[in-house]
Each structure stands twice: as structure tokens, then as C-alpha cells.
Length: 301
Image (cartoon, rainbow, N blue to C red; front, side, top):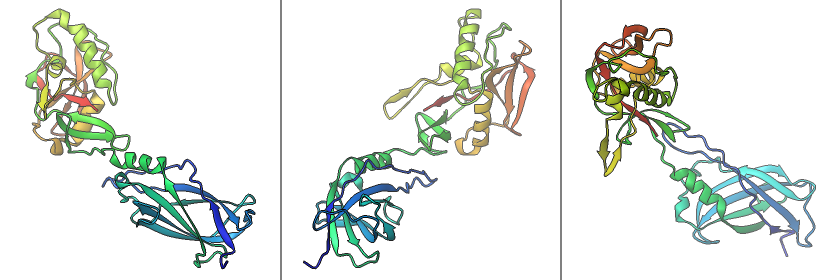
């Protein structure tokens, strides 16, 4: 036999995927690959410098090459174990994992070069499906028409974010429901507006069951898009309102007036926070809850 070595076993070990979502939603990825190298007598090839070419075959163990890369001057350890990362080359992120099955083919040069004299093929099972699931995830973006409105903020690599209604819910409405009282609506940050809105509704509705006020205008808003009705809108927190202001051109439909947030002034029962959409300046504890200001509802996803 010309081959002095034979790839006796190549076992794909629970690979770790390193995902980094770019703005263009491309997904560069790498996988850990481990294989045990043995000679024709089944002895381990230990502490040996080798060169390797790795290919992803689509359809069968002799199928079309969907991706290939080479690595040189790498070493087995004392147990004959080869441990490398692959998938950094151009084209790996574009592998159509939904169109499997897929196989991994390794070609090895035991002298560390590119004269590949031994080879082995094994089928990929769970790892590509994990890759496919990652690639199949929808990556949301600012300006996207989604969830009944326009996405104006995203986080968790585009998996979650905030959506603004496409129109104002009021061109002029008071913050309170006719009675000055503390509602406890002082939380701020992402999602805080939903809690604030619930507190305002609970605290102010007993004052006038038919009254119109900012939080109620948001809670009463609903829209049906594509057969789905979205009704979980709320009055944004001061922080969320500022994020909305920063994307006002993309979202659209705003005026240059004052918009209510769901934050009331913690030091004075008479005042609540709003933001001036002409300048982006937040008016904290400056205007009374009786003022008639604009309202734009938002929701989380």
C-alpha cells in the first residue's frame, strides 16, 4: 500500500458555533473539529505535524463540494487527537444547510504539507441543523415594518426590540385622568414603559371611568396587520421615548411638538416627563400633567 497512514476514525465532537451578526445579517461562523488519527496498524499518530484539507459535501459522501479550506502545520497530541477550528473562509456562511444531508471529508498529509494521501468521510448530523437554525433566525432591523408598526430599536443581535405605532394616538391629550396623584410610574429603560402604563391605568382609572389620558390612549390602540391583531401597546418610558426620537425620520409621522412619556415626576405629583420632538430635549418635572401633548404608542417584541 502506498498510504502509510489511514484515517481510522473521524468523530465530530459537539461543535461550538461562534455567531456574530453583522448589520447586513450575514453570519460568519466557525466550528471545532476533532479527529483521531491512526496508522494502518491502528497505532495512534501522536505528536505529529500534519496538513489537512476539510470539505463539506452536499447530498452524499461523494456529493458536491459546498465548502472547502486547507490548514497546514498543525499537530496531533500525544493521544493522536487532531483539534482544529474551521469555517472561517469565504462561502461558509452561505452553505444551504436546509438542503442536506451534508458530509465532512478530511484529507490529510502526515508530513504537514498539501500532499493528501489519506482521507475519511463522515456524515454531519446535529451541528449543521444547529447552524441552519441560526441562519434561519429572522434578524430584525431599524425601519422594518413588523409587528403592527415600525421597528425603531433592536437588541440581542436583532432578535428583540421596540416597535412604534405608525401614527400618533393623540394630537393633544393630558397625562392624568383629572386628579393629581402619584401612580408610581417612575421606572425607566427598555420595557419600563409597559410597567409604568399599567400603574397609571390602575391608579387613574378610578378617577373617571370614561376619561381620556395619555396612557389610556396607548392601551386602547390596536392594529391588525396580515390577519394578526396587535393590542399590547403602551406609553413609552422617557428612555424609550428618547430612542424613538432618534429614529423619528425613519419611523415617520411625527410633528415638532411635545410627546408624553410614561414617567411622572417622583418629587412632585403635578408633573410628568415629556420630550420635545423639535430639539430632542427631555422636559423632566417641568410641565404639568394637565397639558395637552402628543402621544405615540410602542410595543416590545
